Every structure is written in C-alpha cells, then in structure tokens.
Image (cartoon, rainbow, N blue to C red; front, side, top):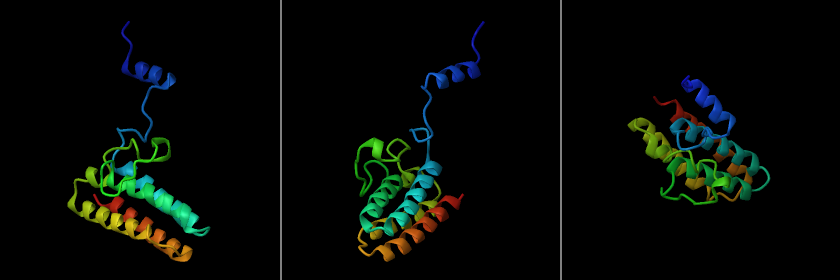
Length: 139
C-alpha cells in the first residue's frame, strides 16, 4: 500500500523535519507580523532605556529590508527572528501601495535607531507598530 500525502506529512512532522512557520516558506505576512511584534517589544524596552529598544528595532529593520537590504544586520540567525522568513517584507511586497507603506516603516525604524530618550522611543515605536499594521492591511 502506498502511503498517502497526509501520512507522509504526519511522519515528517513527527520526525521534526517539517519547516517551522518562520522558515523560507513564510512571506510578507509573517515578516510584517514579526516586525510589528518587535516594534511593540521595543516600546516595552524603551521604558527601561533605549538600548534594548534599539535591539528590537534592528530586528524590525531586518524583517522589513531582508538579507542584503540597506541596514540589514547579519546577527546570528537564532537571534534574528526574520533570518529565515524570506527576502524581507519590502522585497516580498508586490503591491506598490504596500511597498510605499513598508518604505515609510523602514524610514521610521531608522529614525528610531537614533532616539536616545526613553519617552520619545516609546511614542515612536507605538507609531511604528501602527505604520507596520497599515502595511499589513494593504491588499
């Protein structure tokens, strides 16, 4: 008897060989979701000082620009939430309106990396999370 696709997938999953949701099969939706999550983590970190917030903003930038993109920081993959998620949201976007919103979020992320005041960081990262959400909502 030939195994069914469902049985093969079940076997691969049991063996731990299926790709996780953040691997190369993920795309723009996953990249934008991870970027938005890290902008909110930057908000939380900003209340304790800007150092941790800037680390999360680098993760945001990596998710938006992708490997080789302007400002991408090749940090160890286990520390980069978007290391295996695709080419970066900007490169995965096909809609010009969405690309424009992603470019705006990239500019905001870069501006956030220069902020040194915790209160300004929190306000900025909240706006960044909203900007990323706007990019996610473009169809």
